[in-house]
Length: 188
Image 1 (cartoon, rainbow, N blue to C red):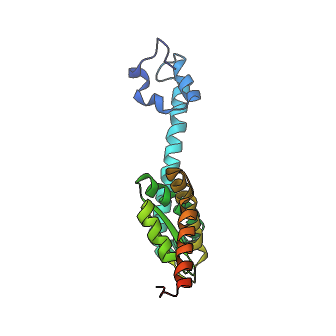
Image 2: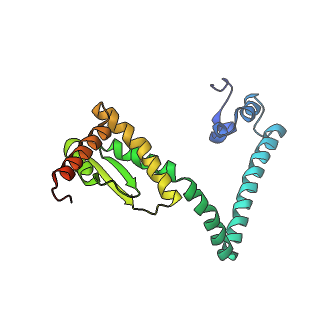
């Protein structure tokens, strides 16, 4: 909205546009710069700014005088938030990796016997990296991170290649492992 024709920045100051619309309307009525309404509105804004800066000064003083307590509270708040945000962090990291063209699937837990062949097929055919982030013992946070990461990276890879490359490579790796086992050759 444009100011009325009788409006002048010289009388009202350039900070008028920082005020919300109801306060701006007080200035648009054409009152003189020294009127009581204008002084009251500016005092309310000035008081709010002083109140907020007073709180920040008090917080700074509290933090300076209670450093150990502040650190303990910070850790007590930060750790649960970090732990609960694991799936979201995994999803965001995977989206970032996919945007860069880096396709990766993370695994954890006891590996299948054909996993080396599975990883090799994914890498050779589709340039997808299979990364083991943990073996048998997996924390809840790490498991959540891996599920969040794979929730973004697996559908992106399926979309890029047009079919389920993971099922295809798993079936081929399992078939090759079974053939090696039945042929009696030494399996690595």
